[in-house]
Length: 202
Figure 1 (cartoon, rainbow, N blue to C red):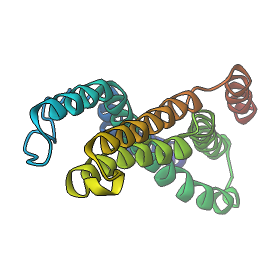
Figure 2: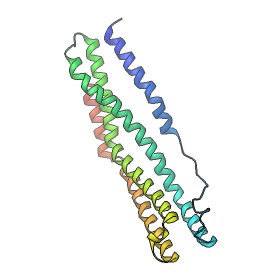
Figure 3: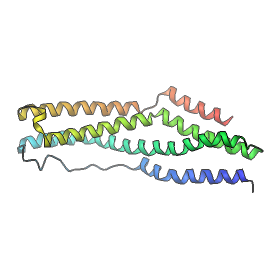
Figure 4: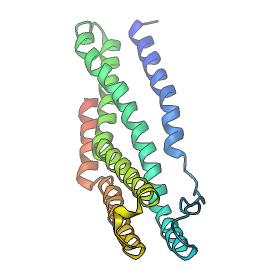
């Protein structure tokens, strides 16, 4: 059996098997957490805890979406890096050994595979969306933790502290929405994906 044909089978078999964990993350959905971080606080009274709990519950939708996006973007980002960087280094070297149609097919398929990964990575703004979603998620939990541990950093009175906290949470929620919208590819970007794929097939 031709060595290049065997190389194609091995290469894409490993690529497929290594994509299975990524696919499981892409299909996985994090469940809603009913735990509220303010319940154990001795600083706030029951009425204030209720307001904080209601606000926290309203944030769960945005948080769950952000958490899911972080996991998905992270897994696909590293999968793309793992496969495109070594392949891009190996292709110029392997070109020197092209001798038959099988070798040409192998290099074409590898190039097309890398182009597909990079095109989707770019179109969905994977790296930027991962960073934005992760920072927004972290910013929210840091704000919650600061309110519990250092409520005075939000103001001198509880009324001011709660108002300042709710205002900061609203800003974080808007950043999460912006991250969500920035991850949606435009029609032009979608066309570029298919254009790039077709060019690599030639």
